[in-house]
Amino acid sequence: MSSGAGRIGEADAAAYLETLGYRILRRNLRGPAGEIDLIAHDGDTLVFVEVKLRRGTRFGSALAAVDARKRARIRALAEDFLQFLPPATKVRFDVVTLRQGRAILHRGAFS
Image (cartoon, rainbow, N blue to C red; front, side):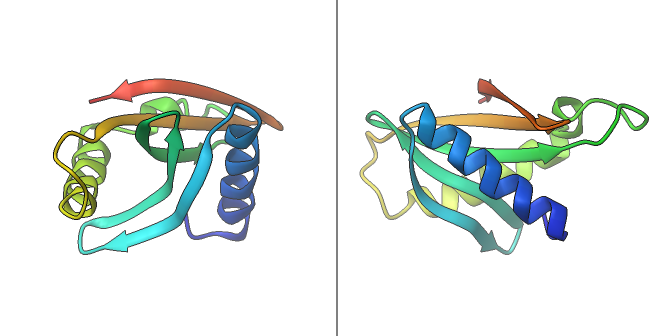
């Protein structure tokens, strides 16, 4: 997310996740394949989080916007990040969708 609204959405998503007990480790991790919005710990699981903000459904749902191509980019970035961690690290991919001030967590949205 690069827009001002996107950055606010990421901040809102991070705050929401913290209320659920997540510990935010990184924001906006950039790599050759793109960007991961948030990296967090949920207990002993490392979570890569994509944040999607939608004002309406004209172009589809926010969750549907995390299509196969986007998931592949996130996985590639996660693999690069994981090279520096123990191989037994538990990993999960979550998506937080934001619409009309409401955040929804899609835990384990893809693998």
